[in-house]
Amino acid sequence: MGDIAEHLNEQGQEAYDAHLRGECGQDGPCQYCEEKKPKENHHFVELYVDGGVFGRNGQSRGVYWSVLVEEGEREIIRKQDRSLKWKTNNDAEWLAVREALLWATSRRHLSPIVIYSDSRHVVDCFNEKKHIKIERHVRLYYECKRLVQRLPFVALKWVPREVSLEKVGH
Image 1: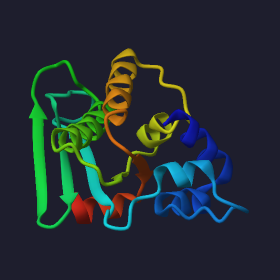
Image 2: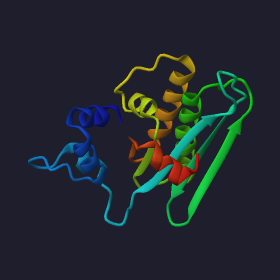
Image 3: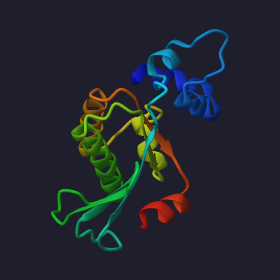
Image 4: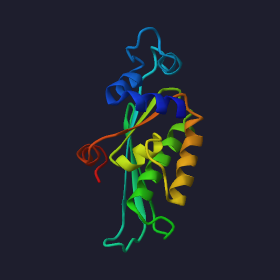
C-alpha cells in the first residue's frame, strides 16, 4: 500500500478518486490501476468511521468509536473502552479505522474497501502524508497496515464532519 499511497499523493485528489475506480487516465495502463482494478462483478465496500471521547476539558473517561458498513444491509458497529489506556479523540479515530479493517478481514473480503473518516490527521498519517509522533498511534498505524496487507485493496479517504454526523451519528 505504501507505493500506491505515494503514487496517489503525488497526483492529488482527482487522481486518487480515479484510482479508486481503477481509471487513472494515464497514457496506457497504470500498474496500480491494473493491479488494483476491481473485477467486473466486484463492487466497493464503503465504511464510514468516527470516534470520540467520553468527558470534557482534558478529563477523559474513555473513548468510543463506530463503523458504518454500507454493503447490502447497512450495519453499524459501536464500541467503547472506558479504561484510561485511550484518552484522545485521535485514539478513538485510529480505533475506528482498526475496527473497520478487522470487520473486513474477518469476512475475508475480496471487494475493494474504501474507508471514510473525518479525521484529516488520521487519514494523512495512514496515507503517509504526515509522520506519527505518539507511540500508541504508531502501534495502531502498524496494526492497521498489517490488516491492510490481508485485503486486496484498501483506501482511507477524508470526508467533512457533516458526512460523518449524517452517516455515523456522532
